[in-house]
Image 1 (cartoon, rainbow over the protein chains, first blue to last red):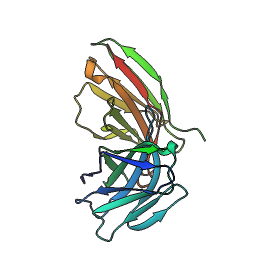
Image 2 (image 1 turned 60 degrees about the horizontal axis):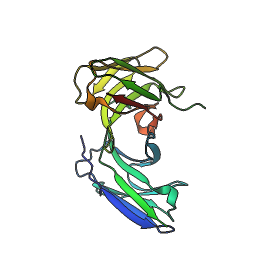
Image 3 (image 1 turned 45 degrees about the vertical axis):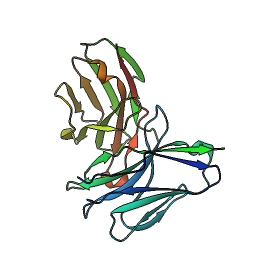
Length: 113
Length: 112
């Protein structure tokens, strides 16, 4: 099961682009990389998922290099409401399309006015 | 479309008691996952149910158990509650794992 490593915390000013990198050296061939956002006392919210190269949606971009041993979540022009914990997950397919995921420690992003 | 719903939202129990938490997945989702999140900590995987069967469990003692019903809703049972069981218990559902999870808002359990 691939283990993920993220920075414990990051600070950023409003309006800046924030990049959070996650290391997953033992990622397996069938693993997907997923990022979630969690506010205090709420369940995590799906942000973005990818397998390789680059994925972009209306919220964020996910960059995955060719070796897939790391990934970077990019949040454009953050606002105060982006202050949250961000989790990088690597999911292992156990066949039949099912997956067990392990949450890492998460990165606490603090956006400063 | 209704999201993942959990009940109750808050619960206070005494040490040694038993508790049952409930989760209703998004319609069409067959997998239900349970996670424990102690205050200020990350999410610890508890249990995974799919098609009514327990598919995997995390590193928790047997007093943590659960089940999934034919309508794919799920219950998490915790027996002989201990103070350290105080946490936010999160339920998530998915249709297929590669599509990502949708989490509920959780049940805040306090053991006194």
